[in-house]
Image (cartoon, rainbow, N blue to C red; front, side, top):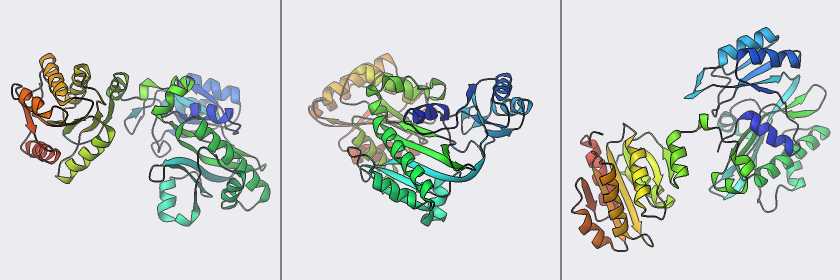
Length: 384
């Protein structure tokens, strides 16, 4: 779950990180009033779940309340990478001496949080990593141990030579790591962390992504979800116990198990196809889940073929086949459906599916995926 900058700053502040606060407003008039209260130069920043706000015109400097009003009017309603700006954050401008980058992400290959720091802040960290990798310092830490103070000082020493500055950055890194672990985050980022002319440090911007799997432990954080920014189908799938992520292909994939979903998508691409989604119905043959899955997938006009890939274990294949038949009775689908069922009661499932119109059963995962790609290349079917 992505958070807005103003939400991330509130959380960072609770962990002792000094942030540049401000006011969240939803109209040019409110922006002008906020700037009036702050007195002096302010920055008006779009609050959307997208990077690159500055390049898209979503961040503007305003010297007066009148300019703040104009800046908010220009930003509100903007479309930034598919996200309409409905609110802006007005924050006092800072007297910046230098900008740094601090970020923590989950390194899935290592299974550990990865800290990245750079003396070059305020820019895309991907650009720094690609063009000036010597300016990026990395370090893994174990979440059960946290970031140790001497590791924090080592990291800070790589981007700041002044002893007092190193001490301040090390302290911020330690707090950022604790925030990452305690909140079950998958990303915490300060870009830029700024050193002001008076030598103090603060987080000028903040970014935070929470692991959905850990939200049950943090009801207070779960309440921060902004439904305006959520994909409506992804939200519906989550509420109905499905895992759904929209992609850009034309083969709708319904599987049971995240690992099988990844393998299915890899095989689709191997045979020259493009998956339209990642949809995991989990370990259940509940027909209601299949109905929801089909409803979500068939809403996407780019989907030409539906591919089921079911590995029957505790979930019996014949139960899945009956669930699919029931789902098609409730919501008929005109698209070709290719299904691979293997495992418990697969023979019974195949025999049952012979009576279900529009469903083509294949014996192996490879055959099913290959057939789905063939049907897609042949034009697939039209949706009702």
